[in-house]
Length: 355
Image (cartoon, rainbow, N blue to C red; front, side, top):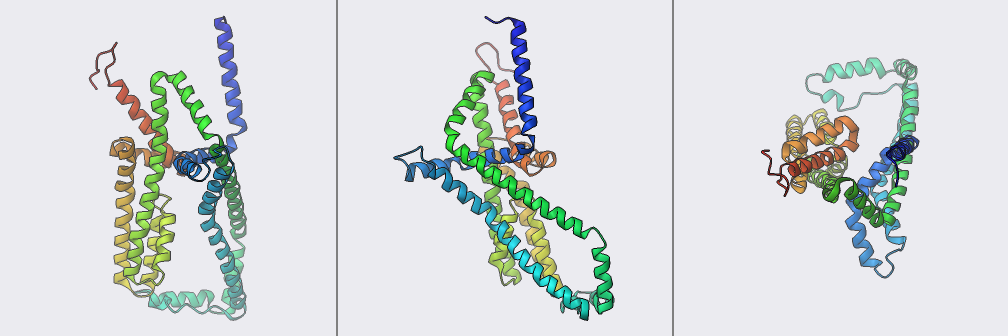
């Protein structure tokens, strides 16, 4: 038997140790959260892979390692390829600037074709970059700004993102290895804390995370396909590549608008005003429809969450927690809705409330 003072002391010690632990790992909370999101979403795929190819020895490391490496290739492959291409383009830009330093830089052919402002744009270009003296002055002014510090900051951020991604994948590997045992302990803990409804709340939260990720992926895939046809109709020669890039970028909410707007500007610069307006209108229609209606509906139907609360969970989560809030927002709303429904149900000792 323990006394009330001992119980209070034990509770205080537990809370203190918990806060200390959170403070120690607070710099890794975001990668940990991403690992949990990826683990919940891909867990059925991991179980299927394990049963299909490793059923004789279910404790093998191979299925967890294979799936982790596959996700690493999917997540970091396109980004790494883009950075490599950017480095190659940077070398080309350096050679171009070296040539411009001695000879000036001629205006591009499409600049004069801009409707209404073509002649003024060419004149402004010649005044700023047309001669070697003007180019040297422009470069001197550019390098005297904070451009170099911005470049170093960007490189630092890229390195940190890669390090955080690597840590996320390491944690994800261990989630695959010990996920079944960890899930059972979480369910037992929620059952101890919240009673018979604890398991249901935990499972509802997991379904909300999975539904959110699936909804985002499906909507991004749909946007990439639809806008790929739009690029082809507008006359782009690499419409398939643009569609794939748009689909990848569309995983970030509203980011696909940047690709569509850039493609429309290229068409405007080339003098294809009608095609540019058509692509911009079609792209904005697809993006607004999918991000503001289809995505909340897919997520809400999966977790039985009303449309308006799904939309508020997505937008409010992004505003509060950034990209990670895209998953936390609908999850919190789904749990709150589950608690609300429980409070409106009758029990043997309580009549049905008037909700």
